Image 1: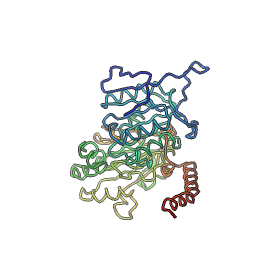
Image 2 (image 1 turned 90 degrees about the vertical axis):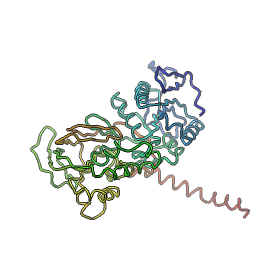
Image 3 (image 1 turned 90 degrees about the horizontal axis):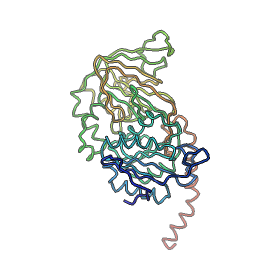
Image 4 (image 1 turned 60 degrees about the vertical axis):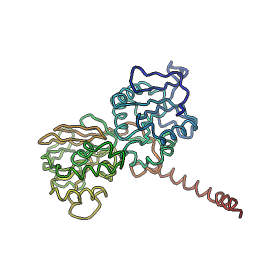
Length: 406
């Protein structure tokens, strides 16, 4: 694969990590390099971008990725690439990237949900500016977050086009016990499936591997007694919450019962396509919470079908799925609860989930409007694209007739 011509190549003693360094820019009037911080003001129409690309080593060998990279080069962008060979290498590479934020317009995370999760945690840990602009190139198994954004892994060239020419939107970053996540934290079925899903099975059947693995471990699924606290709201369908006295965080409600499945969403889907939080918006400053109380094990497969459809069926199982929307949530279980936090396993008895509103920016396609509360610019761009297509239709029709000799 042909890479952009680097001024030097540095491995820094990291086995499996190659860091392609672009030439230094001239210093500006303040003595800093003239690079532009990743920011929304850099519109897609303003020409080539300075791109920092983090690529998961194994997945970056795919022909589809190479094709997308070649498109990025041909489109005239200035590219620095870090290609990692292991999770440890990736962590070191991300930390190295953080120190170069001011040099780049866009940071592209090329990998699965886990890769995106690592990048986001480094951004938060290193106190990256809120103007930092992240883009996602889906190379993983389920790619739940990218799919929620209507960025699909079957057309990586189009995904790369979105990365540099999409719409820059401010998005929230959630956290579980201080561990950041963009998509969703799940406990119960989704967690056990993610922990036990075989890598070979994931390679063969993609995101469906999570559902297959989960269905084979249903007998191991058991509820845990839990207590929960959250700010007083209408709580959606969670009518069994009880009001506590007002504290320093305002009115706080509490709930106690047996917890079978828990999903805390910044975005909408997890587990290879299950819409656990189908109404979540990634820019509203709130967490969407879906939880299921105890039920008979033989009802769980049917329940999962309901969850996969977003819980929209009108039946008894839908009634067992409770939802709420809050800025924070505390959960304490009788024993440790395994949580899958965008691919990162956590195992604690107590959890605090919270949200940072508009923590970073994200490059998205206009078709991602359902994931945003403020989607006017995306809808406007969609209508503009439709008008452009309509305007081109007569000329294309004439061209087709000419090609047919008519």
